[in-house]
Length: 167
Image (cartoon, rainbow, N blue to C red; front, side):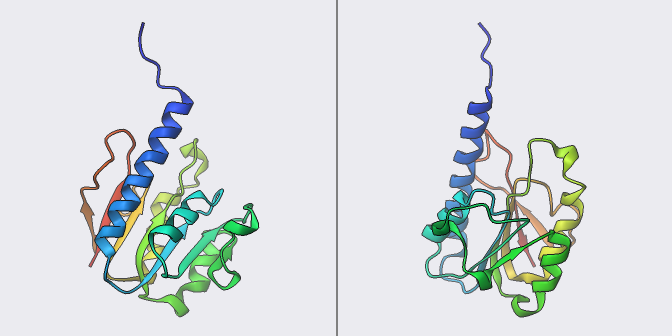
């Protein structure tokens, strides 16, 4: 009987990979100053994990809405709600060059519904990044960015995750 990779299997692979990748990133940025940026709050699971990996760093969070329990809601001055094309540019100046790690969990089950986000989100994130910042994503958002060096990210055998170091 052929093995079928179920929806549950894919979810487990995605979340396991994400946990491994974020743990690796924590080691990469340890001992360096800077904020963490989460693009895509979703259900708050990754945000909660970032809080445990990066205390006491501030975490900037961007998403269309915050449908999370109060315990997983970021502080109001670190939560930016609305379309990324509006909220990222509006928040740039106070945080320009201050982000050490940006994590963009922006994928959906249907890539055709993503409105080309992987082509323009990197440009909107870039002004936030400190020299040498690390960017992680479930989509190829840095493929066309000139100053972004592609990294080999460990733990991505079962689910694709990408990483870049920004010069």
